[in-house]
Image 1 (cartoon, rainbow, N blue to C red):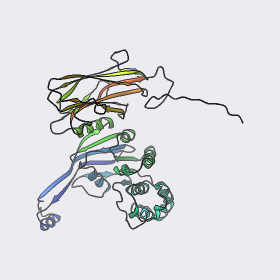
Image 2: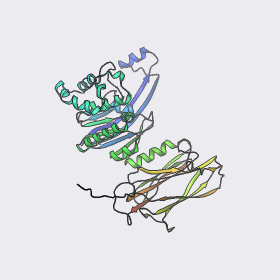
Image 3: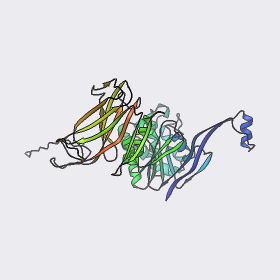
Image 4: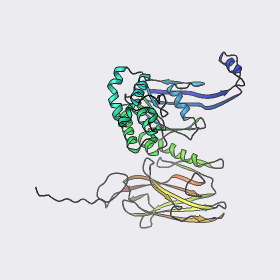
Length: 408
C-alpha cells in the first residue's frame, strides 16, 4: 500500500513584467510571465508503507523544493501529491522557532502546530528534554543555541511521537557524532515499527545501511530510482563528470552493476586479482597477501596520472581506499600511447563474504578536479576464513585473550 504517491509533479517560479501582470494572472486573465524557471518537472514515484527511501542530488537539483511540496510548505504548479498518514519533517534548522522563546516554549509551540494537544505535549515534554541533552539550555532563549543544539531540539520534537511518514533533511549533519548515533537509533526503531522514511543525506554509510531505495534528482528531474549502491555509484560518477565525460552502466554476470565514467584521456584496460601464488582468483583467504594487477593506456598527453584503488563490502561501503598521490608515486607528464602496469598489494584483513574493487585514474588526489577513468565494482571477489579463529565484522584484526584467577 502506497503512503506517498507523487504524480507528474512540477514546480516553477515566475517573474512578471509588472505587478499588474501578476495580479491579472491571479484572476485568470492569461497574463503570461516574463520568465518561468522550472526547478522540478515530471517527477513520479511512490513509497510503500514501511519503506526507507534516500533522496540525493547536487546542490540546486530540487531536493528541498520537493520536500517542501510534500510537507505542504509550498505548492506545486502541476501534478499531485497523495499522502496517507501524518508527516513529521525536519527540513531547516530553527524553521518555525522563535529565537526569543526558550527551547521548552518552542517545543510546546512547534508540537501544537503539529496538531498535538496540551495534555499530549505535557506527557512528552520530559522525553523531549532528555533527548535533546542540552541541560539548562532547554530553558534558555533559542538565540543562544548553536546550530547543533537547534538540530537536537528540531529532531526531538519532530520524533517525540512516531509518525506514519518521517522526512529528514541534511540537518543531522551538523550534530556531533554521539547525537547522530542517537538519532539514527531512533530512526531505525521507527523503521522496525513500520514508519515510512524519506531521508536526504550524502552520508553513504547511513544511506546504504538504512535505505531500501535511493532516488537521484538532477537538474529538476528524477534521474534514477533503484538499488542504493547502484544509484550512489552513478551519483559519484555524475559528480566527477563534465560535458566531455561519459557515464556507462553495465550489468555483470553475478547481478552486480558496474559504473564507469571519465574523460577517457587515460583508461584502465585490464584488471585482475592474484593470490599469493600469482594465480588469478575470485576467492581469497583471510590474512593472505594479494595483488591487484591493473593495466592502463594513455590516449592523450596529460599533466600527471594518479591511480586510486579501494575495497568495498557487499553493500558498497568503502572499507579502505587510497591512491598513488598519497604514496608519492605520481606519474609526471604521461604521453599519448604510454602503457603502464600497476600492482596494488594488500593483506586481506577483511571480513568473510563478497567484496568489490573500485579503481580510478585522476590527475591529482581526487576525482572531482579531473576524472580520466573511474570504475565502481571493477571486479568482485569472495573472502573465506580457513586459518583464523572465528570472527564477525567487516575486517580481521587479531585479538589476544588472557585471564587469571584472582584470590578471594
